[in-house]
Amino acid sequence: MTAVPPIVTIADLCYSTGGQDILHNINLDVFRGDFISIIGPNGGGKTTLLKLILGLLKPSKGTIRINGRPPGTHGTCIGYVPQHVNHNLRFPATALDVVLMGAHDPRASRWARTSGQTKDTARETLAKLGVADCAGRKIAALSGGQRQRILIARALVSRPEMLVLDEPTASIDTKGQTEFYELLKELNKELTILMVSHDLLIVSSYAKSIACLNRCMHYHQSFGSSREVLDAFYSCSVDEICPVGVIAQQPWTIRKME
Ligand SMILES: Nc1ncnc2c1ncn2[C@@H]1O[C@H](COP(=O)(O)OP(=O)(O)OP(=O)(O)O)[C@@H](O)[C@H]1O
Image (cartoon, rainbow, N blue to C red; front, side, top):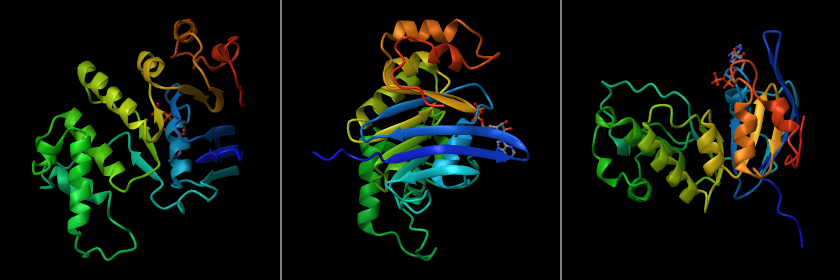
């Protein structure tokens, strides 16, 4: 039987800018059905890695392939939910308008009319995410949790294979976060998920594997005992250093990549 190739292949990736070595020798494969959480300290390079995967930055060394092709040329294979979205609260866009932005083909004229079918798909996506009733409401009038679901709908409307999220729950309360991660778990039945998060408890409950990133990366394909993982996390200060070194030494480490 032929092995299924990964959606994302990152090989010997380095990224430097302004004389600063931000990512060093990163190797990671993302397979269909994965739910990988990238954790690490502030400034560890998590957002930079996502930008490289999306083709927004170019590697200094090494390669990234998305379904065998360079980033940025993979069409609608990846849906992206960014870390910070600054909504202009005076801009009169509805939730449906925002979702339709995700269906816009950049090669089409900016004046091209949105087809009825695309609108139906956008409404179906909103319904799938439990926010169908928000379609006609102004984005500025929605709660943080509702807005986050609209942003996911925008990322999903082009029917990607993989969802990439950068700290998606920063503006959601604890109850909303649990609902949000339950939603991601449901979506993971059909979609591959790569998510940056600082929330270690959540990560251990929902993600299937973790990648610890602090310039270098250690990838753990399985949590083993999540209690041990959390002990490892909390045994040293995240402010001092991401516990990459500690975790890498744990006996349950299956694969170490540096
Ligand atoms: N445009 C840029 N020009 C120069 N340096 C940058 C730029 N963007 C990011 N950096 C630097 O790259 C490093 C990694 O930043 P990045 O935003 O990827 O970290 P992060 O792990 O996502 O952090 P956080 O958890 O705070 O969001 C930081 O030292 C940052 O200052």
